[in-house]
Length: 134
Image (cartoon, rainbow, N blue to C red; front, side):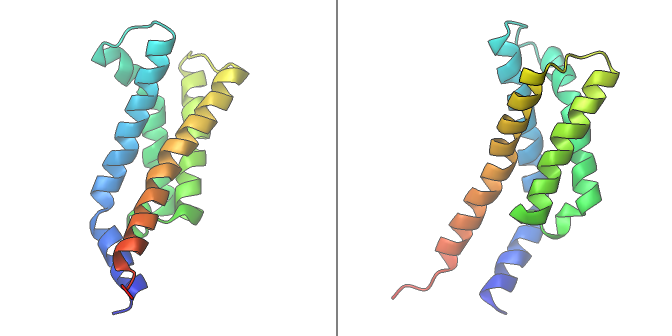
């Protein structure tokens, strides 16, 4: 088994944790937004704010079949990020939520850092762990 195959096999076994990480990070994004706009941090409010983005993230995972390569930055990570942001904003708009341009920009940036950041960190950590010591 090659190093790449071992890393891929480990990532595939960890996909539920990686999906859960995505979903938790989206809830954190919603909580941070609610806190910064003084809307309160009651769990029902946070979940209502996060719901469009949680649904969109699940859609992104399904479209990419991301459980096959959950850590991959391209294309899986990027598509999950963009689907989460775009479809989440779309669902939010359809349900009467605000979609000001400034919110769209913040959403794109924060979700990009969150959803791509933990994948990049996992990739770097797994490469360091698998690197032979000379």
